[in-house]
Length: 382
Image 1 (cartoon, rainbow, N blue to C red):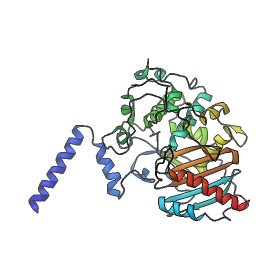
Image 2: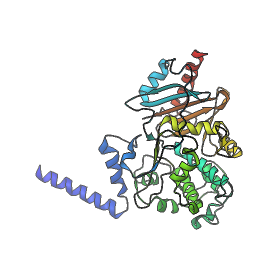
Image 3: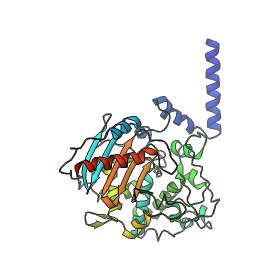
Image 4: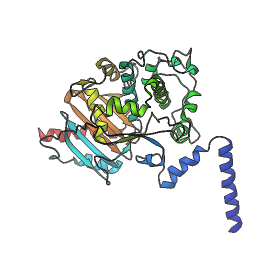
């Protein structure tokens, strides 16, 4: 047994050494954060294992009003079953800008921070719109090469990054521990990883979902606003968190304590009520309670398809037609959703541990269940 343990520790030591020598030592952090905490993948409150920037609550909080019949209708049997199956920790239905139904589970509350995952991509796109409004970026057509010489002559634009049409050689693989997606999540010096990307296909021609697009976009915005001395989390606070009256502080994960580049393609820690504010902002064409925070033309463009061949994506937002009604959504990998149906003035927010199975379109089955069951509940009150 003693000899066996000695061999085992020797093998582990060799593996660790090889990982360091080949610059794959970030895998060790992945093992420590995920497997040694009893998980098999990233999870909704993993932010405690990463460095982060703080985003304060608004100094002028604007609580969501509650509907007169708030929480008087119970969840349907199907919704209850689905929420239990997929580990929903927060579920909201907002109707006519008032909270109509609200349910939390597993000790989570309306103030609990959970990981946005890729819902952050919609927030970064909103920050792009704000940077254009503020004059830091000229337009959606401005060249990325104006900010980073690595991309000069590529014809890559900031709009291409927001609409997932960059042509970059990023591999969107979530299961490969040696892949760039895992490196971006667990490694330090994220900018170095991003600036090593190459444009290998013609930008602006077709949609291809790549998390690296959003990270590069965030780096562009950060460089564009450098005269303000704000980092991106501070710009988010000034642009949206403060004026939209977010009730609770949030956080944004960064790559490490030295470089402090936000992981922009993911990883804003906030709660269902405050995430919902971005749904309302875009539903109302960039207007927030009488103040225009985003140009309405930019908002309208964001929630329409850029390419007719791929109608599921605009600029930072997922798009859908369900029961003849236009739907746009923020979406995260574990079934984080802010789903907006403007025609009916409905916003549905779901946060939780897992999502459903992917069907023959870009959405998993749980997405449709949440919409159908929310409407079934709303019909009971009418």
